[in-house]
Each structure stands twice: as C-alpha cells, then as structure tokens.
Image (cartoon, rainbow, N blue to C red; front, side, top):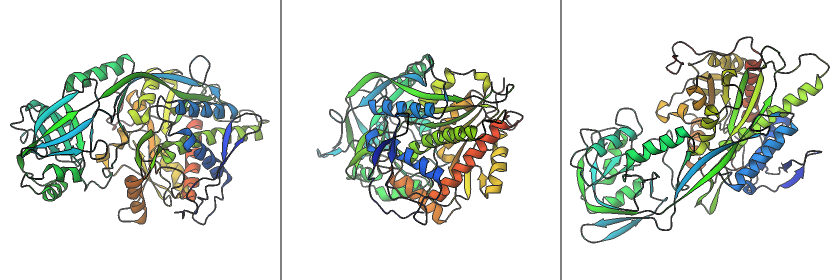
Length: 542
C-alpha cells in the first residue's frame, strides 16, 4: 500500500486536443507501492478519477447541477472515444425522473424528556437519524420502551410507545424489517434501532450525511413509495448511536455497556420501560428532480452477434454536500464510484486505440456490442439502473451480460476477488478462467449478512433475467489486507475522506484493470452468451 506523499492535489485543468474535454493534470503525489505509477493506462485512469472526484464536481449528488456537469463530461469522453450515443433521442443521456423528500436540520429536533423533568437534546445526524417517508409526522411524543431484539415474542406492551431495539445485522436475531413488523403489530408508534458496535464487517458510522428519500417517478416507483408510506403511516423509524443509547439509559438503572455487549454476542437481552419520553419534531421539503444516466455503445464487429450487448457499468453519483467531517463537507466519492466510471472511459479509449492500430484488419474489434453505462441515483437506491432496466434504450432481449464496477477498493495487493453472483451464471466460471493466469483467486461472498448482492447496480439486471457479476477486493481473515479494508469502511466509506488523498495501491489497481479488460473482451467475443445455472435461486423461471 502506498505511502501518502502529498495531502492535497496541486492540479491544473488542461484541454485534450481537438475535443474541448476538460481533464485534470494530476500532481497528487499518490503513487504505487514504490512511489510511482509505472503503467501509463493506470495513470490516465487516475487522472480521470481525480477530475471526476475533485471538489469542483461537488460530490456529484443526484439531481444537482454538479452531477449534470459530471454527466456532460462523461458523455464528451464517450464521444471522444468513438462510442455512439445510446440514450434518448440520439443523445448520450437518459433522463430519470425522481421525487425527493428531505428532512432539514432547521426545524427538526429529538428531545429526551425524562420523568424527573430534565431534558436532553440528541444531535440530529450526529447521534440520531430517521427514515424519510412522505407521511412522516411533524410532531410525535411517546414513552420509550426497550424490548431487546424486538422479536415477536419480545414486542409486547408497546401500545402508544416508541420501541427501542438492538439493531443487530447478524444471522439469528430478527432483522430490521422483522423488528418493524413486530413492534407495529404490538401498537408502537415508532422504533429506534441501536447500533451494534461489534458488527465489524461494516461498522456503524456517524455522522450521517443527510436525511433524504429519493424515489422514481414511474408507476412502479410511485407504487413502491405509496406502499412504504401507507405501511409506515405516521410511524417514525430511527437509528441511534451507541453513545447516545447510554445517554438515553441515564437514570434507568440499566447498564448500556452491558446491554450492548450482550447484543453484540447475540445473547438474551432484558426488556424494560425507560423513565423517559422522546419528543420528535420534523421539517421536510419536497421537490421533483431529474438526473441522467449516461449511455453509449461500441458496436460489435460480428454481424450475427452485434445485436447482443455486454453491459459494463459504474455509478456516477456520489453524496454531494453533507454533514461536515473534520471540517470537510464535500463527499467526493473517489473510489465510490468515480474511479470506476473513469475505468469504463479508459476501456473505451483503449478499444479505440486498438481498433485504430489494426484498422486494416477486417473484423477487428469486439464481436458483441458493449453498452457503457454511467448510472445516476445508485446511492439513493439503485434508481438509475432500475429505471434503465424498466426502460432499456436497446432491445431488452439483447442484454446478455452485466459486469458492474462498484465496491472496489485497491488498498492492498490484489490476490483475491470476491465475486458477487459467482455461482449463479456461467460468468462466474468465465471470471475464474480469466483470473487464474493472473494469480487472482475468485471467491464467493463470505459476508452474506451485508447483502452486497442486492446493494449495487447489477441487482436490477439480475431481476430482469440478465446474467450479472460484480467484484470486491478480497482478503484472508487476520491479514493486513483485512485491516486496511475494515479501516476504509470506518474512515472513508460514504465520507468526505473518500477522496484522492487517500492511500492507493496502484499496482493492485493496474492488476484489476487488466482483469476487467480481459473479462469484458472474453465475454464480448465468446461464441455463446452467458447462461444462468440451474441451481441459482435467481434464475428466471418463466
């Protein structure tokens, strides 16, 4: 892993010859393990990453003017690389209509009112947050009742109360959805999930950037939004930090540390009413927004296969402006996911260069068409990819594979890749065959509790029957690689610190890039399209 040699980017904007496309001439000082980026392709990729994740792009929040600038930049780079428009009306853009509900810090408060008359303000977004729905009440005040894991058996005597539940994500105790069903059935008017500090796979992080809900303005999106709002009614679902839980238990005679330890070990928990009420006030603003997917195609060279499309995708959106962390309020999203939008741009440019080099050879190029997708709204719930799969701009039957780039962190040497959906389609075997000579082991997900399969843009493609795959840098337990991976989720994930000043292992990035290029070319040139395995629970049944 590289040492950090410069804390900031001393960068200048240059213009690429003949195109007017802005690029960043990087001087970040972050290089490979020996202090240099030796690979020219990797250096070009990193320059694009720096530009897309610079402060000038303001975190590329869905629906923002900054995101629009980023989308136009990506479209210009696609055009420069010789890709054809694959959006709407002959453009590179597919507009995605959305509706946003935001809870504002001004006018929103969470006040503990104890039975002895004392009050304590919980800090919004720093200690407590809430799920945003269209029916969120402006005011709610109710007594608090701790009910352990809030299983059906534990969720008793909750009429008119706010249920406080240990929010474990481990297998065994009820998950958040099950807790919600149980406490609502018992008459609760709200629920608070307390952080599990022992869930080190993806530890709880504070502050939250903001409290916001964004839904698609489609018939399905509106239906899902209405179902959520109708099911929630005036119910308030909240999340509470572990330190704030200790504050909440002051005066109850209960030991917060002991309860947190028992919950973290999945041991039985007590149930008790707290000598306190929670007074909640909320202020929301709503608006309709639109944000584009950026879509382009490299036509295939084989007359029989060019009507089939291999999708390569990454999400362009980030978090934008949010709650400051260490004085920084721009959530740049360098590795999540500017770096991988940059990688599909780099692949397009590499293919163009290869085709120009061998333009005298008939049939040069990839046999199948490749559809390049920079999706919007991934951080808001896979919105751009969902919209595309509902409204594809190429024939749906022609979508033969989706290779999604997200959750990739080149923080340590690349020897292992976790492959999501590796055992669901023949893409898994193809990935293993490509990785083997590169000495990369392909493994199935060993942390299913995180539900990573459903949390990235390959998931909507799988839901419409398209064989898909995604990757995560893997590690063995107890290694330095695991330490670095866990640390990233504590300090960089969905934070302003996910920027280009973080240490990067560029040798690992180069190795992954080569793997991705080879995998895409292999799938695009294979004589048969990828297929679902009969054993997959996601295999289309009709």
